[in-house]
Image (cartoon, rainbow, N blue to C red; front, side, top):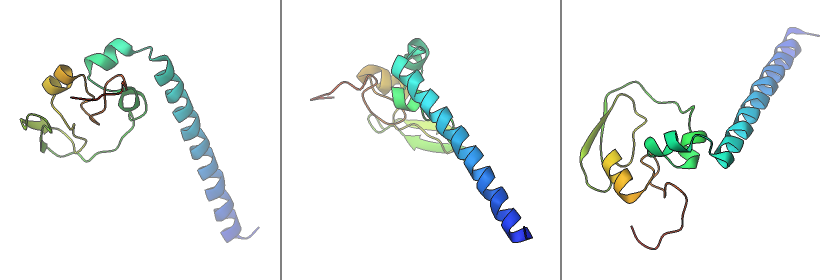
Amino acid sequence: MIDKEKNLLRKIQDATYYRKKALLEFINAAKDAEQDSENEDRLLKKLCLYCYYLRKNTFAGAAITHNNCYICTKEMIFSSTDTDLICAECAKKHKLCKKCLSDIEFKPRRKV
C-alpha cells in the first residue's frame, strides 16, 4: 500500500472508532434519560431530560459571559460561553429548563 492509501485507511479506522464510541455513548445517555434515575439531581439543577442527559459533553469557550434571563431580564454571569436562557429562580418558579426553556418534565402547556 502506498502512503496515501495507508493514511486514508488510518483516517477511516479512526473515524469509525470514534463515531461508534460516540453513538454508544449517545444510546446509553438516551437510555439514562428514559429511566431518569438521577431525577432528584436533574430537578435540583433545573434541567429537562434532554439537557441533563444528552447535553453533558457540550463545548464552550472559557470566557466570562453575561446574559440576561429571558423571563425576568436579571443579569446572569457565567464562567464560559455555555450560558443558560433563564435564571434558576425563574426556572424553579415556572418549572422550566434553565438551559433550553422547555417544560422540565416535557408536559404540554397552554400558558406559562
